[in-house]
Amino acid sequence: MQNWRFIVLIFILANCNIINPSDDEDPFDLLFQLSIIEIYSRPDSREIQIVDIASRSYYPISKRLDVALRGMKSLKLKDGSILSVGGLGGGSIQKSVLRINSDWNDFAYLNNTSAPRVNHTLTEIENGDVVIIGGTKREDEVDMKIVEKFIFATNEIRSIGSLLFERSLHQSFLLDEKNILIIGGIDSKSRKPIAEIELFNLDSGASSVVGNMLFPRSLGNAVRLNDQIFLLGGSNDDAGEIEIFNKVEQISIGTWVSVELASLPLNLDTLNGQLNGSKLEMIGGFTNGNVRNNRIIRYDLITGESSVSNPFLAYTNPSCIFQFDNRNFYIFGVNGNRLSNTIQEYNTESESDVEFLALREGRQFSSCVSLGNGKIAIIGGW
Image (cartoon, rainbow, N blue to C red; front, side):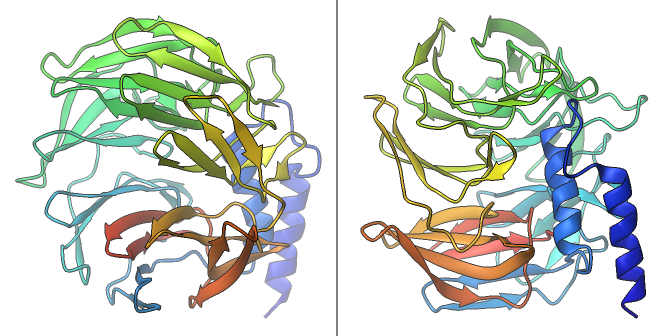
């Protein structure tokens, strides 16, 4: 029974060039390949789990996903239900859309998106509808410029306009009731970084360029504080070689003037971050040389002061981080050559973490949604 796993592993090693990835390797693809090695003997997850930190317990929703998915995007809607869009599964990028009910014990599939979506963004607007933007392109005939909207009241998916660029691994922000800012990322097909900042108008369905980034990047952290957008870390492979850097820039909303700020204390292709006041805490991702990061990087957006914790995590690349009752928690990740199935609690004073709760299975690239009161939904993953 074990022989097929050995054969699969040999095939992957022969075809993925893991040790010396090619210069044009996409950051998501690299993560994708590394994950195959780590979990080649584990099935994809079709489970949706609800974790309750307060009671130190969890339960799976009895209904399972039709296709095991990872890399989908999810968010909590205004009625407490959860919307989840796209993802990678079944050997292809998916168009699927599902909605988990507000009791978090069942879900239903809705109409598909027009284009397969992974590495896209979901932006909730003021009336509760959700705008779906961008994604990685794997088929020439698919137009990733198409912007779609999930209608909260009817569960419909509608095309509402178009971007100027086909983007993936980007960020989007709702600026006001009419405009969404789209920034960063790479061209969905060529994988070259996009410097232009777009503003998508919800009334007209048209997009316009309002400025340019100083340091084009994908991944990294992008946060809004008052009338400023801050971009921290990320990667850029414009020169044909992936560069993970420590650059920080601040962009003023309205004037779209960009200025460089004090750099991060290390190069970081960050995947997770949480903002507390003006202080951003980042964890996960890779540093140069494809070394996984297991430290917390703290950066004050106002003063530019930063610090790096001691290495502490029992694993790297957590699926998500969250706070509850002034305590920090990290879900899943990679521990050595295996996937972790634990939720870790981090102690700020001792800069150490302990196992808080062990779940049934380990995963990576899960979609996590904070439900409030210490409850977290974990959807899919590897």
